[in-house]
Every structure is written in C-alpha cells, then in structure tokens.
Length: 343
Image (cartoon, rainbow, N blue to C red; front, side, top):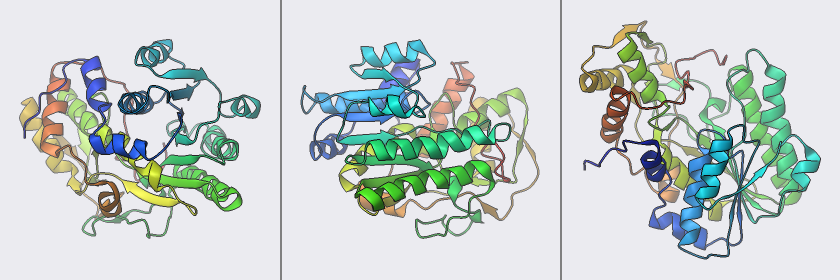
C-alpha cells in the first residue's frame, strides 16, 4: 500500500508519533504518569509525543514528562506545545534525579555512542553510571530500557540474526558500555524486584537520519559506500516507538529482553541500488561483503507485539523523496558500516 510521504518536519513528527490502537490499549493496562528519561535525543521527542497522544485518548489526568538536559530549547518548547511536560535534569546528578517526580512507567533512552573513541570514560559514565542511578531511583516503576543490538557478536548473514538467547559478545567500548547499562537494570531487578524490559534496537529509521538516509546522501554526493558490513536490519521509528509502550505491560523480573528491529536481513548493496534508482544516481561501492554482520532476529518481538507495520519499499520511497528535495537532516550518521566497534 502506498502511503503519502511526509513533506515537512512537523508532518514527519506527526507520522512518527501516531499511536496505533494496540499502543493505546497497552497504556490502558498501565496507570499513572509516564516518564521519558533522555527525551532530548533522536527518538525521544517523538516517543514522548506518541505517549501524550495515546494518553489523550484514555485520561486527561495522566501526564507524560520528558526529562533531558535539553540542549535545544526549541525541542523543549515543541514538546510543551504537544502537551508534554518537561524537566531539565542531568541524569548523572544523583540529587537532581532524586527530585524527579515518581512515575509508575519509565522509558529509559539516555546514552552516548559517538565520541566514545575520543572520550571513553564519558561514554561509560553516561551508559553505565546514569542507568544505575536511575534504576535505583525508579526501582518501584515499570521500566522499558533501550539498549542496542551492538551487544551481540557479528553473526552469519545467512542465519537470520542473533536471537535473545545468543551469548552477548560486545565489540568495542561503546558496545561494552551498553552491555553494562543492561547489567545495571538487571541488578536493580534482582535487588529490588523492578519490572524491566530491555529493548535491543537496531537500526531506527527517520527520514532525517538512519541507514537509508546515510546511503541516500552518499549516493547524491557520489561517495563510495563500504560493503564490508554488507547486511542490516532496520525499523521505522514509529514502529520502534510503539513497541516501547506495548512492552510496558510485559515488563518482568528478571528482565524481559527483546530485539526491536525489522524482520528482514537487508543487503546494503540492494538497498543502495534501490535508492539509486529512485534518485536517478548510480551508487558507487567499495570493498566486498563479509559473510557476517551485526544482525538481530525480531521473532520474539513479533510474537509479543506484532510485526513492524511500515514496509521497506515505502521507506525507500520516502527517504529518496526527502533527500532528493533537500529536506533538513540531523547530520548524525549511524556509522552502520563500522565493524571494529570504534565510534
């Protein structure tokens, strides 16, 4: 089915934050306010808006509270305009975190990836110490904590991706610190009975960033696309957003671990060629595909909350149209091609 493509930032944000009926139903099975910790990042604003739109269909008395340092005042103002309460807070400040309001449901999104190579200590603080502080503070809440598929080893491209039972084997300090983040929530669950779901995400797609946008901008610029990491999984950000809320009633002790991604193993070469056809440009490649890649199997996610609703052909159409029109980008490449874990 062909869907109309968003043509402006506000239209895109509306598309990414639209809750489906199952999301509203999941939040009806929870109570009280929803706290989104680390709401100022790439996904945070639309996930907070989705929660506000879902709660508006349930009860005017429940709030969504977005917590971040909010380096962008415009992003904070936009959230307020969308009916989301905001609080500025450094999640490494124990006293500030202690002052945050109680909330029965918490979405944890804070973390750092890029800059790890130059400042690994900062990455460990943000990815391990901040989760420890927040897990302790909200030990009585349901917590859905975003993690990453980077905690897995590279797996054979023909094998369908790592499952939640695949032994973790993070490559590089970023991935190691993300496993540390998971361990902090596991510890809180074991020590305090905290109900947790860990969402191992890769890779979320927004038209302003993501693997497809990386490929499209490289094609337009005539840059060679590396093929060594020759296969990827992707998921439309709206699908990733709604999965987080639909996991809230399923949080458990010990934590439920769920891969959050699309169902298909997608060859980078094929994606680039498909985008090139839509852009009227021939992609340039360098290197050859390795037999393994960073891939996750989303079978458990699909059994719990359903398959992603967005189709890859629609995403290819939308990304190509967005990049071809010169629409705004976030300027935050995914570096999906990285195989050594150095970001």
